[in-house]
Length: 254
Image (cartoon, rainbow, N blue to C red):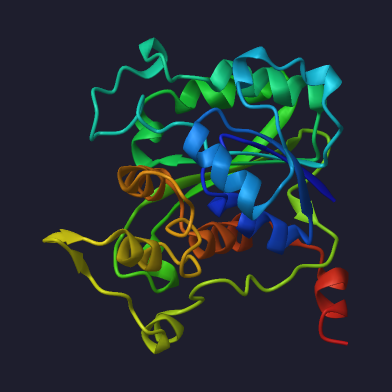
């Protein structure tokens, strides 16, 4: 299966989706220049950059579309301008879904999106023939030492179901449980009196250096990690929202 990724960041959501669906990301649309540099070094696939200027009928077809679209318009930590925020790009994601018609759409945002803008997302999905399931999942549920509540959304064509009949893989990156995380050698917690970027990276369930080995300004490490998602958290959300075909699941153990 092939994945197209919108608003990729450091790739946390895509790491989970690739593993769960045994899939491969073949292109992305990430505008931020620092995240784009990470994508080039870690993944190397085509980056179409500005989501607002892409002609969706000209990009390669994909089975799965992912989107960790900006949370600032909906976050209680900001001004919650919603659709009036310049960073509100949901209409462009809607256009991508309507044109590409993927089998799966996997999205992530802050919990505050439920009370601001989410009703429009559901209405728009229904208008283009997609049903959806969603759930709030905490990073602490997969062993992270913080809550980091996030809204995960799985959408699929209305004439189909939320059942996946393919093979799944274990995530195999970072920590997969509380005990596994505690067995890792945690990096230095502080850097000149501030929580170190390496420790934040560790708490986000990423391999050491995934973000912090990239040659970009240090403040961008914090920005990218702060905007990202714990891969194991996203994987757990998929386990809860995507139903496995019982025959396919049985095949994994034969």
